[in-house]
Amino acid sequence: MERIAKTIRSWETPQRALLVFMIVLGLFSLYYFVIKPSSSPMALLYSDLELADASRIVARLEKKGIPLEIKAEGTQVHVPIEKVSRLRMEMAEAGLPKGGIVGYEIFDQNEVNADSSYMHDIKHLRALEGELARTISSLEGVVSARVHLVLPKRELFIKEHQQPSASIVLHMRRSKKLNQSKVFAIQHLVASAVPGLIADAVAIIDDQGNLLAKSDAEMDSQHQTNIEETRMAYETRTAQMIEGLVSKYVGPEKVRAEVTAEIDIDRFSQEEERYDPQGQVERSRKIIRKSKEPHDLTEENISYEVSKLVQKQSKESGSIRRLSVAVVVDGHYLLNDQGEEVYQPRSQEEMDKLKKLIASAIGFNADRKDQLEVINMPFAKVEKKKVHTTDYSESIIAFKHSELLRFAELLIFIIATLLGIMIIIKPIGFRFSFKKNKSDVDEIFSQKSSSQVGLNSAQVSKSLDKQSIYELNKEVSETVNELPQQKIKDILDTHFEEAITVLRGWLQEGK
Image (cartoon, rainbow, N blue to C red; front, side, top):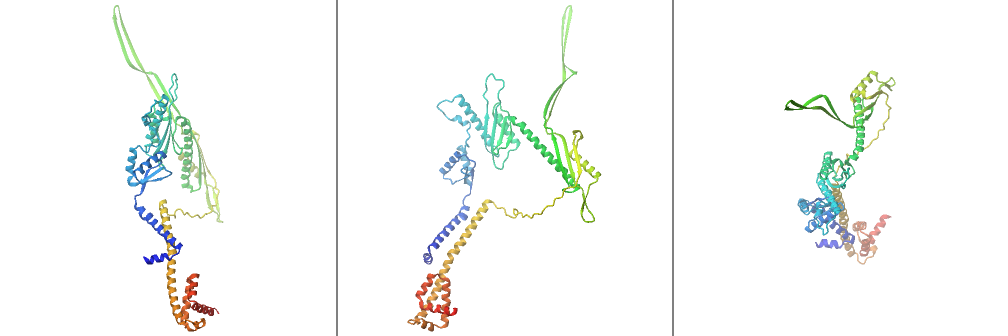
């Protein structure tokens, strides 16, 4: 330990600072790579919190001394994973999180002054909206809900009353989407909870602005949009079907089809009642006889039921009113004597067969005045340039974000450690090498100087044998190459005569 301490004291200030930095880096790495992974991981307790709820939850957790992490700008709270379930039960017992929704507990507040009728109606409306929002938020995939009710005030002596309506905004989870059955369920849930409200008067949208359910006023415009989408989808599907069918005979990329469909957008409902006078059916018979002299009275009452036929007929839009199909088929290409491709049209018999095949596939109906044209024409040839592209996406190994961060941190730690070793160990090795060389040089110099005391530089050069001069020259050369200028100056001050001898030897070698 004393040797290490002495070595450290002999270091310069930058080397000591670097040693401290490496110690701190090592302690940090020990904590991050060893201690922290072994500690309890954090798990999500609540997300998408209101700031008021987040502050209440954090205050209760800090009061209990439970470690926590706040993320996503205060909307997420993380706690140790083994305490998540228990803490959620405790928070639910305390009524957290409230989510900023007020339900029927608004009437639990004791107020000194009694509310007016208007304020009572407003509170009742808020409570009803809050309770419906809580119920809808409990559905799977729904994070939160916002309900707006329009309840017209009932007026006396008014024949036509305005019907109630409702609007709902749903905040969905990222990977969740409500199917149509659940949307209808929400509509009927709200309609059943509000007097006089029908399901068709409930509009529902999600947090992305997508219309999930619409009221009656929006049904017509949405119906027109659906009809147009249905028409385009039918045309595309029919064209692809024709191309796929014909290309199996004429070859790929040798047929093109275009389909235009006229869709009937009218819809109606018809109810008809028919009565048949000839089809009378005796329903009841009543006979009354009275005997009174001199006359007898007999009264007979027969009731007949006239047969009635009730027919209800409804027709929805979306049926095909007229169909127009155009198909272009490429011909044959043969090689002539010069080796060139020559276009040859298909025979009329072949084209007639293709036309019959297409007519059967699309359900051709002459009564609808459908049109079908199959034409044989040469296709224009376009030379495609080959572009060599390299797809690097498949060659890249997919890592998770956390794994990439951990790998980068580990790489930085290894690089910093290697740099620290190079910067610290190299000066230590240099000092040990210098001490060894210096001791060897001092020993040589002491031997030479003890036998050459009082001699001048010429006598010293004569008294030293060639082997000693060669060894001294070698040692000093190595020392000069390795030591700084200050060390060379110290050697000159201590062993001036011997250094002069070595320098003269270098000058003679230079000549």
